[in-house]
Length: 445
Ligand code: HSE
Image (tube, rainbow, N blue to C red; front, side, top):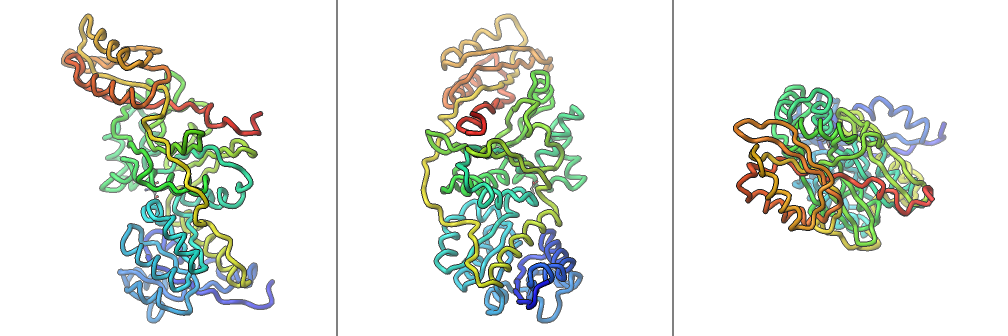
C-alpha cells in the first residue's frame, strides 16, 4: 500500500472496440492500480463522435467531448491515448499532444508504420515518450520484450504471424480443404474479416506491424513502404494440401532479418516446415518468433486483436508512463529516435526456394518449353508433380526449385506467362529457409 496517491490524468481519444476496452479495464482495476502503484489513474476526458456510446461507458458532461482539441489542450492531461486509427487526424493529434508535452500511447500501426521515426524525434525534442505496445501483435507484449527485456541481444530475426484474419483464413483452408473465397465469405459472416478485407488479406496490416517491430528490433528506420508485401488471395486449397504432403504449412508471415547484406523485411505467404513452432499457430491467434544472438529462439503467442487483449497492451503502456510520471522519473523510452540507418536489402536479392503452380495444357510435350524457361533463367528444378485436372484440357503442375534469386524468378514468371502452353501462373510461394533464421545465435553454437 502506498502512502500518497498521485493522480495521473489520461485523455482517451476513440471509444470504439479498443477504446471501450481501455475504459472498462481502467474502471475495473482502478483501485488495484491505486494500491499497487499509488497512482490514481483517471480518464479525465474521453473523445468520440458517438455521444451515446460515450455515455454507456460513463463519459458525460465535462468528461466527454467530440473535439479532440479539447483533450490535447487540457493542461491537466498527462497522457493522451489515441485509438482512432488511420493517418488523419491521428497525425495532428500526435503532433499537438507531443508538442504540448504530453506522452502518447497508441495502437495506430498505419501511422506509426510510416512515421514512427519523425514522431519519436518530436517526442524526444519535447521530453516525452510514445508507447505503442498495442500496435503490433495486439495483446502480446512483443514491443516491450524487444525494447526492454531483449535489449541485451543483437536481434537477428523477427518472424511473425501478425494478422489474425489471414491466419484464420489459412488455418481453415488447411483444416477443411476449402478455397480462399469460400472461407473469406464465411469469415466476413462470422466477423473475423472486414467487409472490405483488403488491409488484412493483401498484407497491408502485417506490413505496418513488421515495419514497427523491425525498427524497434534493429534500432533502425524501416517504414511500411520499405516492406515487400504480397497477400494471400492467390493461395488455393490445392497449394495448401500439396504443401502439407511435402511437410510444409502455408502462413502469411512478416519476416525481418538483419543480414550482412542489409535488412531484409517482407510480408508474403510462406511455406515453413510443419514442425516449426510458428506452423502450429492456428485460427485468429498471433505469434512473434524472435531470435537474439544471446537468447536464441523465443516465441511470443497470444491474441493479436480484440477489445480486451488490445486494451491490456494499451493500459500496460499507460501504467508504465503513469508510474514514471508519479515518481518524477524520466520515462523509459519505448521508441527512441533510431541511432542508425541500416541499409535495406531489396526483395530482388532474396535467394530462396520456390513452389510454383502452373495451369498448363494437358498434352504431350507441354512441359518442355516450361522447363526451358526455368533453365534460361538459371533456376534449378528439384521436383515436378502433376496435381489435378483443371478442366478444358488443362492441368495443374507444381514445380519446386532449388534456391534461386527472386529477380530471376520474377523474370522467369513473365516468360512463363507468355508461353502458349501456360494458361496461367496460378501461384508462386516462397519456401523459407528457416535454418538461416538462427544463424549467428550464440545459443546455437
Ligand atoms: N485486422 C487485424 C488482424 C487486427 O486481423 O489481425 C488489428 O490489427
